[in-house]
Length: 96
Image 1 (cartoon, rainbow, N blue to C red):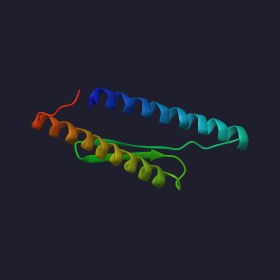
Image 2 (image 1 turned 135 degrees about the horizontal axis):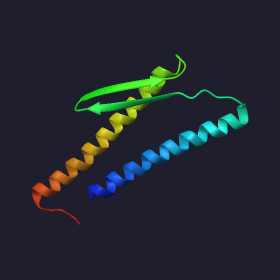
Image 3 (image 1 turned 90 degrees about the vertical axis):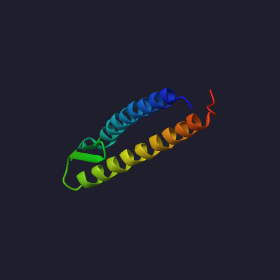
C-alpha cells in the first residue's frame, strides 16, 4: 500500500468535506432565507487534542463532539495503515 496515495486521498476528502459544507449552507440559505454558520475543529498535538468551536451556544458542544470523533477516526485509520505497512516491511512481504 502506498501511503502517498492514502495521504493524497485524505487531503482530497478534507477539501471535499469543506466544499460540501459551503454548498449545504448556500442551499439552506436559498430555501430558508437566513442561516447561522457554526464551526468546530480539533488539533492533535502528540496525544493531546485541542478542540475549539464557535457559533450559537447550543450547537458548539455538538460541533466539538463531531470534530473529536472525526479526528479519532482519522487516527485509527492512520494506525491501521501504518500497522499493515510495518508488518509487511518486517516480514519482507511488501506488495508493490
